[in-house]
Length: 460
Image (cartoon, rainbow, N blue to C red; front, side):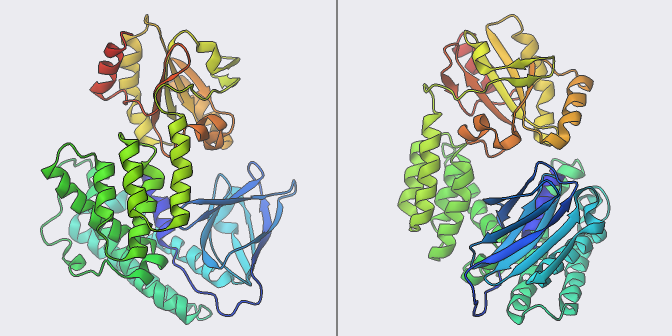
């Protein structure tokens, strides 16, 4: 969860800045990475939507032309995340040692000022939050004071960087306030987790600063991920109230319908798309979910993208032939293909060593494996760890005495099998029948009583 929060914090640093009279219709990004990973830099937009890959040469040098108008992005090399801002006419150089990122990262060139602000801001947040999870374990008053201290410190940092445009400066001042409010809004859930207080509730007046917040500001919705988070939370809370009145309504569909009530068309379309590109892979009622999105969205590009995803998910729905994998490394030695297991039910756990919720399922998975050890079912744990975590995977399987078939995918989350199943988050569980057909592409977790009920239904 800490990794998720850190990634979310990086995103909330990013806010858009309009280009002023560009002379060219592209931006150039180049540089050198020492101790490069797999030879690829992955470019993501501010909401972590994948944009493109940039090839890195054997000596670590890269250069690419990006056809963008303006926007905030992150470069990810498998180890480090570099926030950058691109707009037409930029020519940015990014240089660093991947094994010593914080001390070696340098962003220079035309348009580098915002990227350097993001880097300095990230370091400021990290230093003020402190080590480990201590920030989220703070009690209410202390947490609020610390969050305000972070906001004030970053305002001072922004004011000190005189080369940044007034347009960006104005938007970022608002964004810093939204980040502060978002930190307050997220406090209850994070404190529950890190302070190990599952019943914790914030005081009645803790969120008074959010009262009267305008949830229809289109400009801020397009420029601040923190504001997007606040708007999303506003409508999700409405969905939760709807679910209290109608217990048959799933969370994913209730949230989708709540987003439909946003009065601003741009905001409504953004909320619908951001929610659907992830949740459509997990909804229990694909047809209703897809129909609701298509009837509610007025953005044709978004509708095309969701339709593509919908079609892919349909191909891995119940009764269809399962995608396969071939010669994945087996921790016990040799390789294993999905075809080797034909004739048995196959329960696949897609996980990774860094995934907290994945590790939380291990005790339950062990119990299920033990109970069905003599049955006609194979339990496969499929790691999607990156190459850099290969040794960690090998060690964890041994130390935790993980059972079943312990395999590792050939290309982490970009493996064909993972992509074909549209796996957007982990853990993800898949059940395949003895003929190789899909029983459930989003099967119950081992900790869910519904799994044993499903096994009983199938007479496994």
